[in-house]
Length: 241
Ligand code: GLP
Image 1 (cartoon, rainbow, N blue to C red):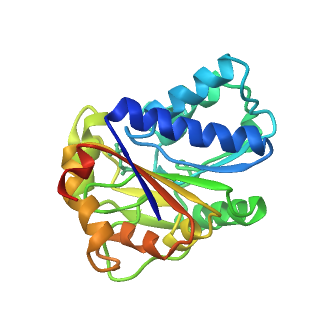
Image 2 (cartoon, rainbow, N blue to C red; image 1 turned 120 degrees about the vertical axis):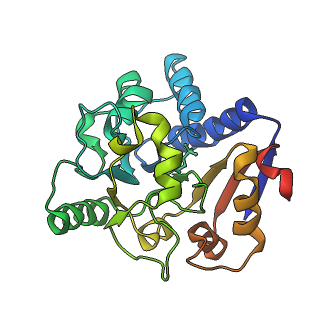
């Protein structure tokens, strides 16, 4: 595991954008695993900037996203599909048919999960999987629990995550209670992982994932078993190390 300490969020985003940009430049037909949340927004901005400068070509890139809220579709502003469109897809020359995200509008949970699992199998392991870190140690929507879920599943959001994510919604009641998410097994199959951690409110959980026991009670701790993980954390997130 490599950990880069960034001075601040801007520095973190620049480093992350450089790494993702290098992957795209070196392997322009890569499968990329993408993430949502506030943390990767700056890295996506760097990628868009590089694209505008003519340094990157997304025409053969394929993407698979980690997760999606159940019940929300592409046109819902809070959906992760909308987020990806807004922050990246609409700003680069990626082909929409090459972008994959669980179908939040499919309320048949079994069918929705099986369909996305089939997509992941067909695309194969991503060359790089981008990850954020939830306040309770979750990755994607794998919340603290008794075991590490292997495949795509429908997850119940816990109270802490609903609290953290309500900032994107008008009121707390609007935050969907369930989501479709890659499992820990899906995430661990990525050839490499790039995790971004920003802000003082992540400092305690960041310390725990690195130095506490590897346990499903801190889902991100499992990354210590992955052979190729890079973490970029800003000074505030490193505050308790
Ligand atoms: C959400 C997402 C995660 C994300 C996490 C942290 O719940 N499902 O994939 O990593 O929150 O988000 P943020 O970067 O906004 O702190």
